[in-house]
Image 1 (tube, helix red, strand yellow):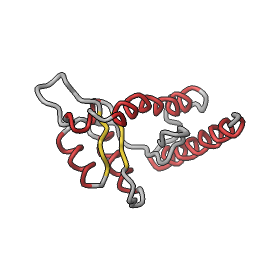
Image 2: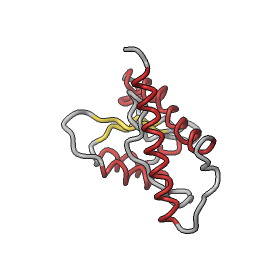
Image 3: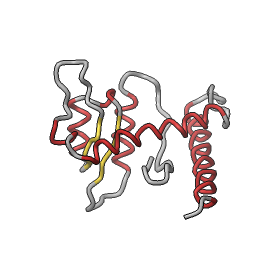
Image 4: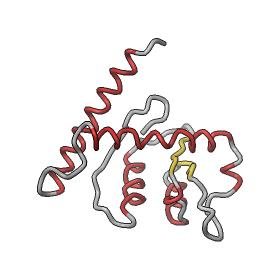
Length: 144
């Protein structure tokens, strides 16, 4: 999701296991075109692992991950958290829950509808596109 207008940039349906979110996030970041501008990626404490942060750096992104302070040492250090951009990313990252809430309540995505991952993935991608269309309509209706 891009932060300025809360539009979905890319979505993917994956198997629910302990590593799927981080693996899928790296896959989605890898799909983005290269850029000369500094790019950041925000995430919650579940993304604060040594491997994920290293892979995000390798892809050319600055990880704005919430530090996991429940264990002895976080992989996100003060060099990242001291910047105002990190605080902004942490505040705005909660917006990603809005499309998923809409998909579950309005679009009927509480349970999978079809047999097979391919059909459910197609439904999920179309639903994400519909969310973006509705969101663009709402953005267009707001005065500048």
